Image (cartoon, rainbow, N blue to C red):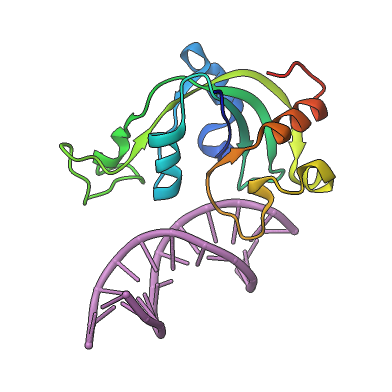
Length: 157
DNA sequence: GCCAACGTTGGC
DNA sequence: GCCAACGTTGGC
């Protein structure tokens, strides 16, 4: 059963254009340092799951692309790199604390902005819109995925 | 830069 | 195990 996710990325770090420019339009989703988000990647994601590529911490936050999960989970190499901002001294290579998956962008969309998402009744329960939500990876219900696809005026994927 | 909300840490 | 202090996220 295919599932759906929304994954936040700061465009200054890795924008949808950056991802599209990468080999096979695929990027390793480095830097997740929250257990709940990690557990989604570790326990629930499957290759082929749908992903809404979201830009956060920027002038116009919103959904900017449709992507898919492109690998099974594996250790995030940045946790072992002392020069990386994501370095975690407490994580050991034989017992990695942080995982990631590869994400492949399938197509760029217009920026479906946060205010637009909030204005849509069909998306009232979208997890990422809940007050105080800070999770960088959140599940998306099939009806929300469909509603967003419709707003983007598009194929379902 | 502000600040609400939330997660993590560490003393007890 | 509790919880205060602290750090981070992320919209505005």
